[in-house]
Image (cartoon, rainbow, N blue to C red; front, side, top):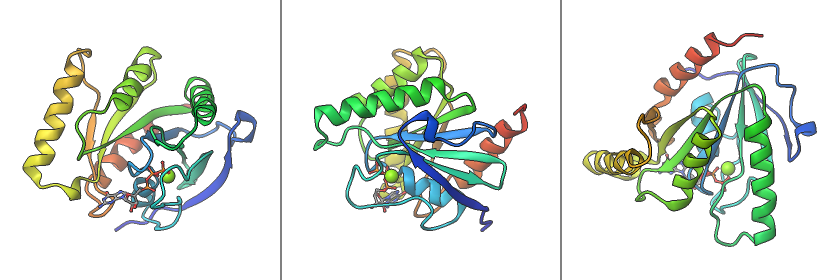
Length: 200
Ligand code: GTP
Ligand code: MG
């Protein structure tokens, strides 16, 4: 497996703490515990680059990583963690809105969905919000190793049916597993394709 050169650039809640937007950037968003940090580690092939934890809600800031000196990854704090207070949810929403609406080098938001679950309201709301704000995104199904293949396919089909109710054109979808590295090559190829269109 090809390991990519990657480094942690920094961690911050406000735009002034984030790295200069001089490279194409990809953000990872999704419910707490969906596997954002694990997917980042799987993509770059470095085990402990992003912090993975059994306790949900560990990532509180936007965590930036630089890969191959050519593109940036942003690990965003998860949503939907039951123990989060209302005030913390407000802080999360303001930070995420600012990030998603104002980060000028943002090329695509990888919206992570747990393959095992039926379509969840907060995931659908996130997707709706991205669409309404014209923010480019794709859907990444995670933890596909935890189900058999037919169940993965039927859950993805259900998700597509639900999206079809509001969307004429469905976004790109990737089925992944950080355990088996399923989807890695497809995601990296997608990122490379978008990077190729990046203009300084
Ligand atoms: P927060 O930062 O709390 O929002 O979580 P996160 O979305 O970054 O999830 P994280 O990567 O920390 O993973 C949460 C748990 O799920 C960890 O115990 C991981 O080992 C596990 N996990 C993540 N991805 C996979 C996967 O593809 N397969 C399996 N079997 N477990 C996974
Ligand atoms: Mg995380």
